[in-house]
Amino acid sequence: MTGITEVNNLSRNSIYDKIGQESGRPSLNDSSQRQVTAITIIIPVHNEEKRLLRCLQRTIEYCDSQQWDYELIIVEDGSTDRTVEIAQKLVSRNDRIKLVSKEERLGKGKAIRSAMLYAEKKFVGYMDADLSADPSEFERLLLFIAEFDIVVGSRILRGELPKIKRPFIRSFLSSCYSKMFRTLFWGVTIYDPQCGLKLFKFKTAHNLLTQIETNGFAFDCEVIAKASSLGFTMKEVPIIWEHQYGSKVSILPEIVKMARDLMLVWYKTKILQRISRRPNAKESYD
Image (cartoon, rainbow, N blue to C red; front, side):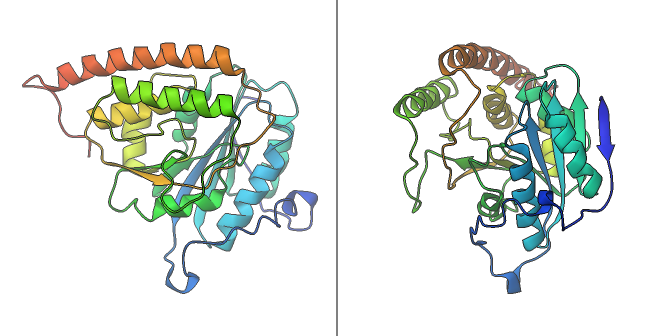
């Protein structure tokens, strides 16, 4: 299946509507003072038949409980398991869900860029399908989105939140990658560019994400680097994040690829900065 599918109303009696109701994380807002939030949440997936149902139900449950004006965009690229079948069932029961399905493997970056073409709400965010960051964590980001163009979730900054528990090798590699990023992009004050929870104003997302060229996991780093070079304002916010086992990513091969891609992002960003300093360079990205 290629293209976008949008269909009808959700039946609250099926098994699809019951999974995830026991998550129980509280909202950060007092419901008596809450304004309606209009948000597009993009969820990139590839061979996620074991996680997708739980992820979508939890996200629907939370957004409904907050009375948000929301839409969910599942962007699937080249899955060979039942991911598409499960997504289609969910789409057929809820007109807030859109499915962007591509036959070829796109990579996270290109998948999110594809989904961005269908986003319609005031704010645009994306999250991981494994629920390492619960959708309720968007509340922490929403607190700052009026003041900033982009709000980034952070697993490194903790504030008053507890320290994140994850396997040593992942913590070590993540720390090394963060230091490499901040060395290459000196002056960019984001410690965790790779966190999979980010929120944008709609115009910012449209102007920025459609320009990103990295297709793989270094996509997030290019988002931060290019946003900084173009003058977008950013805020990094500590979030609750839980390590999820069962990742399909091979750590060492992926970290080598990400390091290579990061160097390429650095090279392209430096070129962009030189162009932006020219007298006739376009300065407005409002």
